[in-house]
Image 1 (cartoon, helix red, strand yellow):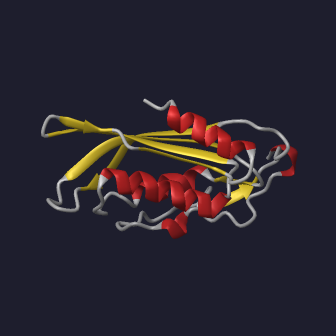
Image 2: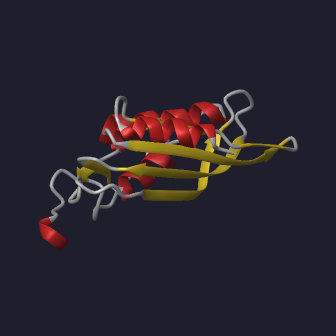
Length: 153
């Protein structure tokens, strides 16, 4: 791998994995950011996200968008895929789902900045698009979070 990056501590990457059928934040894995001195965006789109309505048990479908500015750690993409898949049989409201994803990724990586948006397909004629963000307190990223939140549509 480039610049000496290895699979140290990564169990999902390159291995056959069994998918969890329940919410599984423990599958998330991180690796070292090779450029922590640079501010740059990393964005993931998951257009086939599914979860369950906690009341009816019916499936909910969404595109989940995750954007972050890494610091020392970055999320490994296969583990993120497995994590997002683990919501498939998990019942939670759309707003809770977006906040849970954001908080789990903050716990894993401690990014400088992160935002998560869920573009849920309509149910009963109404679409819900919850948005949550976080900027590291006491830094310019906290200000960035406030600015992006204030101007978010």
